[in-house]
Structure formats: structure tokens, C-alpha cells
Length: 255
Image 1 (cartoon, rainbow, N blue to C red):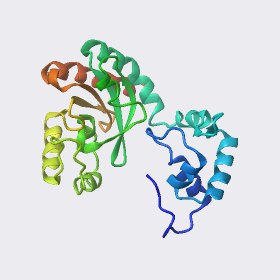
Image 2 (image 1 turned 60 degrees about the vertical axis):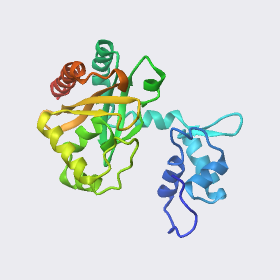
Image 3 (image 1 turned 90 degrees about the horizontal axis):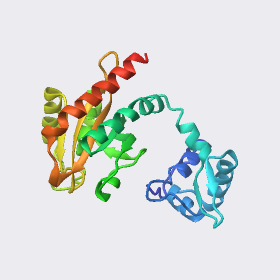
């Protein structure tokens, strides 16, 4: 998100450094210094100074043509996140097996405040599924099956914040009213899983089940995404449920 220059209070060095890193996203993986200045809301000279510091540490890398991208040092640091690395590593073989059994894209999603973050995605097939999500991508909780699972078992405060909206309509099938979303969440809690049809992408549908910790808390969601025209939830529910249970059991056995 581009931050305007005007009307902004003085930001700390940390805030400014984070705004530089936040200038990068999936659609803007390589940026010029001018791009970083514009997207971060920082004066060019300030952006240049911070970029140089981040580059010297390894958080940013510079290509031969002068463009900047996220550096390997930052990626290495990110893999240390306790909520991500052990869970993603534990789930990966199960997701691969799930994909082999269903031919659908298999993925693991966790909640970060009011968004979902994909930790792992396994797919080989139609381009529409290949482009649906990548590891590290964020997904709206209200518009996909795994997001509904995570939101259904989130705190009341989180549910209230999301249901209060605004809820973006990604397709005509996306729930955009708080009352309808609350009904969907109640159904997830009642049935123990979520099914969505063309709610995030007009060509995709999805099924998801919760991954639970030893105390029963929902820590993630395992799901599959398939082409909507050939989507058969009755065939997908058993293998997705089995996979979610297997990941849950693995995490419990690891303490």
C-alpha cells in the first residue's frame, strides 16, 4: 500500500525501515529507489539511506540494473518464526499425499490477525490453480474455506472486526454482509469444516478442515482448491479431514 507524504507524523527509524520493506509485495518484487520512496511515503534521500542500511545487512539485494528486491538474509530470518517453520515442515508430506490422492491443490493456512497466510501449497496442474496462491500469500478470511475455518474458531473480537466489514466482493458469490458471514461461521462450527464455491475466484472452489493443538485450539487449516466446474466436495471431504487430523496428531506428538 502506498503511503502519502502529507499529513504523516514523524516516524521512528524502525517505522521507516519497516515501511521500506512493506513497499514490496507479490506484484512488486523488484523496485527502483524512486518506487520505494513513493510506495513507502518517504523522501528520496531518507529512502536511500535506509535502503543502503538494509542492503548492507542483507535484508535487500540490488540487481545489476539497479532494482532492489528482498534479500536472502531476511528470508532466512523469516523461517525462524515459531508459528511457521515447524508447522509447515510437519504438514508438507501430508499435503503432498493429499494432492496425490485428490489431484487438487493442497495448502496450509494460518491466521495473522484478520488475514490468512499460506504456509505451504502443493499443486501440479491447471494454470488457474497454479496461480491461485503461493506460500507466503495472504488470503481474506471471509472469502475462502480455510479462512472461514480460521475465523470460525477465532476470538469474538476478531470475528466482530471482520464481520463489521467492509467485506470485499471478490466474486458475486462472496459473502459481503456481516449477518451472512456469521451464519457461515456458525455452520462451520456446527459441521467442523468449510466448503466454498466460487467465493474468491470464479473458477475455483475449496474445502478446509481445522488443525488443532494438544489443547484443542485451532492453529491452522488444511484445505484443497479445485476447479469449480469439476468440484465434488463429497469426494474431497474425507481425504482433507484425514490430512488435517494427521497434521494435528503430528504436532501433538512433537509436544
